[in-house]
Image (tube, rainbow, N blue to C red; front, side):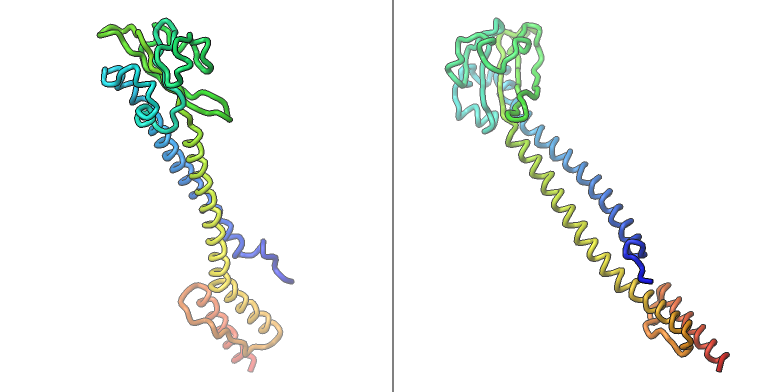
Length: 247
């Protein structure tokens, strides 16, 4: 009766090894993908924070938000919008000049809660939907040594490119893991067939020949020092004694 491959020793041991490999690769992949994502997020957050820190310390002038080249150099090429907004809720300077002089409610994507006098700490939050993801950075510009803001720097930065970077890394790891599993599976299958399966089959074939009365049957491949070779040498010794006893 021919043994099913799925009930064979090769399949069982190989399956265990592959499952362990999948678990290890998945664990390593999840860890490093998370680390990469954190680095990408930290990079874009640093870009978002830099202009606000410079403006709050007086290094960057308010009207600098009008300069596309300067602002993209500071906040990155993913900058969508930059505004200086008064504590009364009116746009003072803007990268897009059409918004200057408007109140917050007239500018799409702005929340009046971001620019309240009670907001004294800078913050960054993710905004937008799946088709238009971005982060909004708000930095209060405080009046002298007081804790009351009189201006806010608002930046809107797209995260579409960084999200694509994250997806590309995840896809690359997935493809690499699948290829690794396929290659190692083939190596395991071939190695087991040469080292274990073929030799066990020869031993089983010899046992059947002895069962059929061929007591002069010997296994010629019992030359190594592993467990299968020990079994084969024991088989040769047993058949030799049987042959001597019968003859």
